[in-house]
Length: 203
Image (cartoon, rainbow, N blue to C red; front, side, top):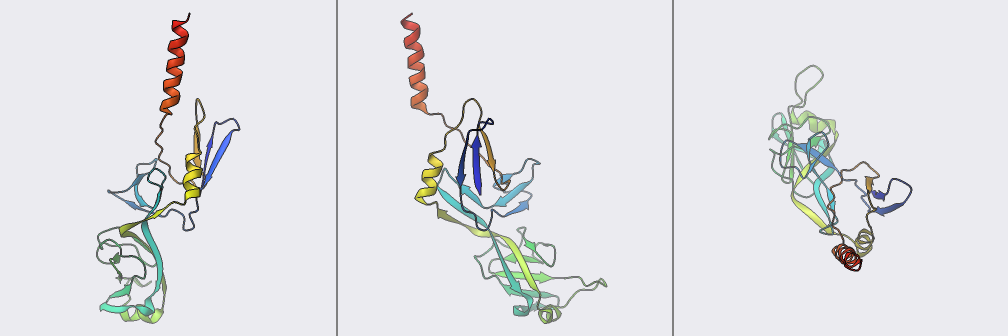
């Protein structure tokens, strides 16, 4: 992901941060760490430049139904090969069926698939799902976020960025949401005030 700062008139600075898996997000009704312009909350991965870390809050992977175990007649349980997810009451995405709390969900180190509809309106049994050997992609909320320190080069590039007066335009190359905190250079502000006071007393 590239973050570009510009003055809107040609001056630009770019900070490139590698995000090989993008910054995936899952829409939630509450507890998100990002709110989009439409007011939708998301749990998503982030790059925390202030804390100098990449924070992974979302896991993703792929399993095949052939590797599952019959959990109930219509429910197949598969092993989550990634980091543990939050419990089955937390929103996730499953490529072959919509998420349903505690029914078709990711919970800890397990993925559950239940009540997968056939074209005729009936449901696949767990044994039928195993026999179909379907690849299932899934995206889920991690139980414990994973923090990875930014590299010294990434931190140095971030600290080298400066704002343009009077306005600075900030954009992310992939349209990712950006939250900014702006801090003035206190030493510069104090010097400008001292200069202004000095010029008033000498006239």
